[in-house]
Image (spheres, rainbow over the protein chains, first blue to last red):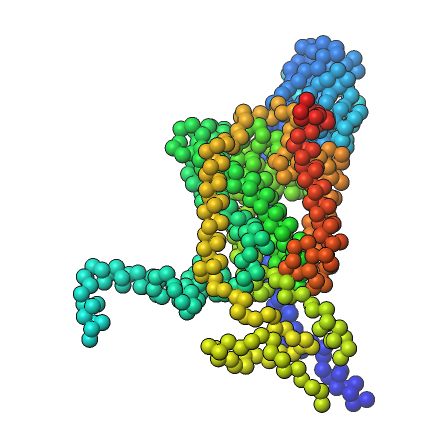
Length: 158
Length: 261
Length: 173
């Protein structure tokens, strides 16, 4: 009985220990917050790259079955009877630029192959080529927005 | 009195230089005896990473093949040539390649510095791996050297990181596509992959942002880290009792005797 | 009372004085062979280091005058070279990546690094230390060498046997 009473009087942590742990907790927390702040600082916030919206000319300029490659923007604009499509030429494997081939696209880096709609037909690529959203600007030009990926096969009808 | 006279004979100028020399190197010229040899090492900031005495076994060339010293020498040469190259290099997507051409054709000895830096970098990766193979094949990572092996692995990763970040800086086709492929591989890592790729490139694809980030990593952050870990690596060699030695092996009969007791 | 073994581990040098420096707890003698097996760092170690450093520097200078560091045309995001190759020490990885980017590029190298870090905490038995290719360590040494040789083969394949579209080519044809 006596022993138990003693234990009740003596808490598991004394005052000094409690404050010491509280102090270390504060040090650890401020360290973690500082680390998080530094990481956030390094996360690219401003995109200094080229603009994501690209004007690709008037619909009348395209003929059916034409593939117009925009090299610097890394897209190809396809005109089919269903409408227009903007397909990325950035390989989904490791980011090389694919080139057009007889059966669609092929990547020179690791030999991935894609069909005309950008679906993988061979090689290590894990996903089909991206399709981007197309819209018509008020003055009648086609505009591709590379920040919006649409499902493969989504054609834009004028 | 005789020795005093001989010192008086010295000219004031000689005495001045001798005083200056003695103020820097307190313990004479090239040490001839054991005491001098000891002072030579532990009174020198740069030499005192060595113990005063080392075992003959660790000096045998066929034991280490000098691989660690070779890797360290390469890193020192890389630091020197790298700093020298920084005088001309400009981390800009429009300027960098031109600076490479200038280094090669216009700057006096520019091609030597660039070539030495390049070949030393390739050699460093090679010799660090060989050094690691030596340590493994001689069982030198066993207690008490476990943690120094871990530091060695970190040093290998830092070496690869330095080589990889330096690869982009010339901004030629080789650089651009090797980094495009390399950072895309990093992007496949689960959870941290995409943030890591963004952190390295500063953008969606390799461009000016990637160049400046790789430059900072290559000339400041990674070499700084490598020097810190290298210092710990050397310090631990001494703290762990010098290079590994066959005498550390548990003698079979003694171990058995211990079991009997 | 137990008999204490008082045989000298190594002979005393008559030119030296000996004193008790430290008492340690232990069940076996920790004294190595004679301390006379040691030599002074200066000049024995330092001269060797200097010679190695100078040899390295000389070799690099010769290499720098004989072989130019590669420099291709200006980077052009629109025209990837065919094939695009990583630095040589990553070619083994790139070879693996050409089969599967996730397994080859993340899982395999990740596991290799973790395994390398864990090695000294798994294999702790003090046998074969300080001896090249110690017979007792055949399993550890064999595994390590197998991985090293495998990486070398992958790198050589990536360097010489990979052509356009990462297809298999034979270098001498």
